[in-house]
Amino acid sequence: MKQFVVIGLGNFGFSVACRLGQIGHEVLAIDSSEARIDAIKDRVTQAIVGDAKNKEMLRELVPNPVDAVIVGLGDSVEASILCVLYLKEFGVKRTIAKASSDDHGRILESIGTSEVIYPERDAALRLAEKLNAPTSVLDFIELSPEYSIIDVATPDDFVGKTLKQLQLPKKQGILVIAVRNVMKNDIQLLPPADYQFQPDSIITVIGRYADLNKLTL
Image (cartoon, rainbow, N blue to C red; front, side):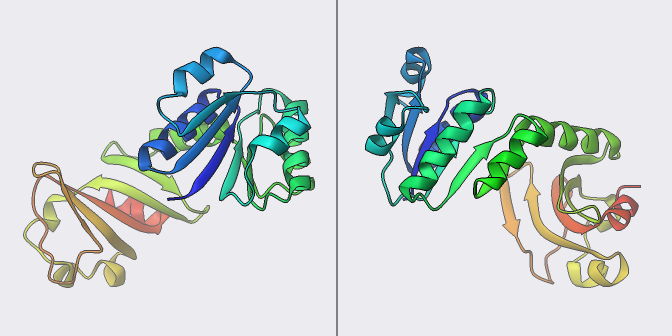
């Protein structure tokens, strides 16, 4: 179990805090809104009403060491920057902050934020890539301009054949990293060479964008 602090419970912070709590981690949630704190108090370890610009309050509430502090104050640039500055001053090693713009992100990086997140931009780019992909692609994650991971319905010509027979890395330049049977609702991670593809399954593959496009034709 890890220990996290989430400061700012907008859509981003609220979702992160709830998910970390659901997984089983210890989560302290801080927000200036009593309504937001009331909404999340049963989903995290502790929820406290507080002002992220209050240095002494943060010093008192934020434990150190802590695995990470997530600052979801993208809508308030001043509060976001001050909060990260204070956390760095307290010796918090890992700070992850939401940015509302490129300029905001650059400032956060310049003051030593461990990781800057652009949730709206990233979601928009991911949606654009999914819309651009063939309709057979069920999900898409861009790793770099050249490499991607996609979920795709198992092609008909794969059914009944094994990975060894298909030789996908050699012939198509792609690697199967998981197979999910939608009827049985089970998943096979890193299937072995003798794995035989079945109908009604979804494969997760990694490869170059151009090679993955050939798979979905």
